Image 1 (cartoon, rainbow, N blue to C red):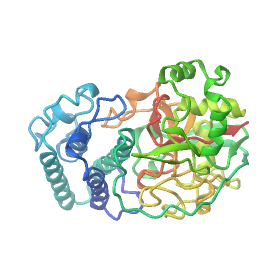
Image 2 (tube, one colour):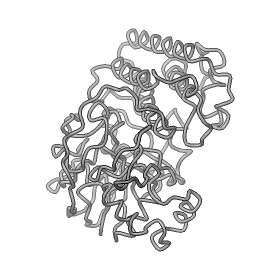
Image 3 (tube, rainbow, N blue to C red):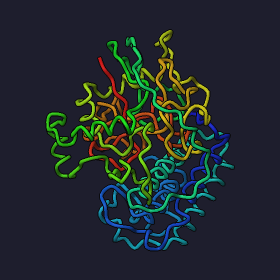
Length: 434
């Protein structure tokens, strides 16, 4: 486990980091109707009522109850472990649990949050507590993204969240950049502050020269693949991808439909005309791979992605924290949470260009990479053992964050991971050529 001082942008203290996450949780769930608190039993979502309680349980477990080598201290909520421990409570059973009502659940979250703030105030410079507070806050931010996915999946209205304005229409950003390749260190170092176990540790990787798209694939570009019969042409799909396409009966991205004026896309509970120059979103890894085969391209490896995001043509040894440098994100650099509330055109946000002139490598949409999610050399799990290791081998790596990602979570080395069939997440992709 790495215990280190905070290196999270936009938060002056651990208390502020926790408070930002909790405020967002409350805002995302404040308008949930009684009939929405459980929702339909689906494999890709949690019951919202369960998920709200789980983020409180997680914070309490690691910040108040955890002791290495010992049984956890008692919870503030009787039977909390039997309700909310995601490692022990099977997903399919979460709709059947005797969950407290929403007011009681929110009361539990409030008691936990207050107790953690008291511990922070009296603990002094406790590096271990600092680590677990950051873990709990960033875990809650991940669930806030999941709340957004859930609302989209279940056709609930858009949440009433404060945020900036989406950048003005900026149009396409076509073309490739030439990337020289070379030797660099993939992953995080002990000097990087808080890191998740799957980022440990930086290790040498050698890359051949390659070309990378300056921007992610857009709606209009992906529509050309759909209109050309890409979903019906077996040659563009891997064996696993074709099996998935047939089982899912996929003929276009999941939230697209044809309207009187052309393609439309469902955004939460309403359809709107397809925006041509925003990144395509809600596509599975299989769909991204099929598009690449149709276009004569390929997905980048995660090493290629991190190299393009982190280095510059003049210095491939020093790695930037963000594509543009080490300065924390602003709304002019990246479309992250608290910036624009929706996707921006791919030509927007030029200040966020990487050293190799790739645009929007952070924010807007997560980007699928070619690689399976696996451990780095010498991997050892952190105390939260269920975070990475159970998912090695059957998930794919995504990089870069999206418009629902908190800036404190997003940086060039962060590895997200989902199974290749998932298209409910805010995922798109950019392409490469050797």
